[in-house]
Length: 209
Image 1 (tube, rainbow, N blue to C red):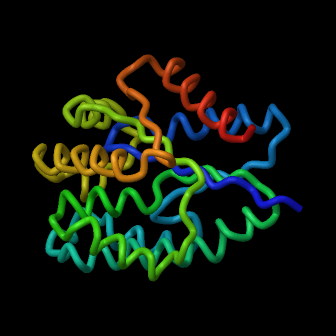
Image 2: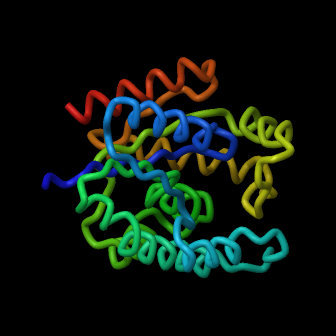
């Protein structure tokens, strides 16, 4: 059995990843692919509990290194318990965030250093990197406005950071696009939803070929 394909979706807050990932899952299933949709931090019981600790709005005292380590711990458990088995069974895994979130948020925006956070995550995941990462780019002001307009969207501790933090996150992703040009592909998430979906779909189908 051929190994599946690991696809991560990345972007600042409010980029629309969650909506697009559901649309992509439906499209790929219609085309006959076996697909697993999951998210980080979370996806399994242990990692979801860690997610609750990380994103709890009352945990404003959390140290940046603690935050980075918690993300890496959740990522490790999620990988070995859910992602790897799905890939071994030949499935396409669509993951809402993976290692690049830690590199952009904790590595760059929190100032811990991309290389240092990458090192922490290498210990957690070994050589298991996504085959394809789609980065949905959006101005943080637009993204945060989208969040505020949707009552059913989870508002977490990171959403409460000041606007400069979110601009640093976006800056971090731009650095990662230059660092991993073969793996990471950028889409303008400010475009209409159907346009964004179509571009993401085309990237995935092209990679599957």
